[in-house]
Image (cartoon, rainbow, N blue to C red; front, side, top):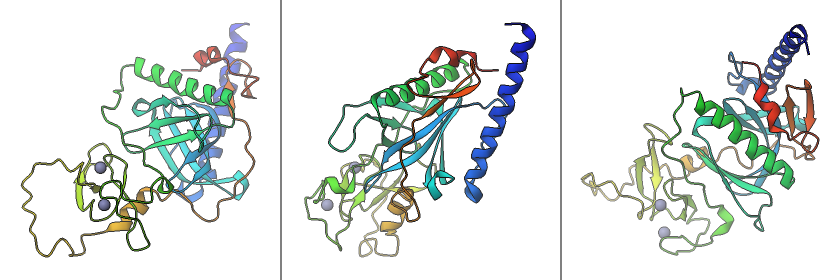
Length: 286
Ligand SMILES: [Zn+2]
Ligand SMILES: [Zn+2]
């Protein structure tokens, strides 16, 4: 291949990449974040089932050379919302066996949030995991990024426990489920009265922790003024906020389409199965 046609290919690639990212940006409508930044390349996209607090739901995932993005699917996949962006250097993957709940699953750990995802097939799972790892190690090799020292725990799904995992009181309409942000266990309100800042999840926000995880030795002089019933108990609010991308109305589940990976060799979109050759990933434009 001549120098000239290689340059042409690269220009076409860059234009297509830019257009793809712009289209993706606008598919998030008003909730869009900035996805177009210089040097960012969209590597692949596809649907994965993401285990939420209440159930596993299809989400659309986009892998870039520096971030992983997912969002909820609305209007048959033409529009997305609730964009989540995770820097790749902060991501850690953990391979998992199939469970009754999810097949072809793995765990995506990040400082802010950790969650289980499931691919439609074993091949797709392998492709996703491989591509994420590949992009990530390339990023870290660049030397400008540091991997995260701490990760959020994944939350135990609501349906997994009908009793508080600390005091074994039964959950009811009145005795609601909460998640400890340190261990991810399902606990009742009286077992999780404490709030602590967990730096890697949020730098200032005080988050719910259970009594077993409450370690801060600070003499916070529990001002014992009839408990802390002074409105400080924003009990549900924080749980809801953290899981606000789950179980929303207006989302239409659609058929799983195979993930697509961009090949800089052929300048075409391929599907997993036809293209899983990570070698071509080594040729993306700088
Ligand atoms: Zn309890
Ligand atoms: Zn805990």
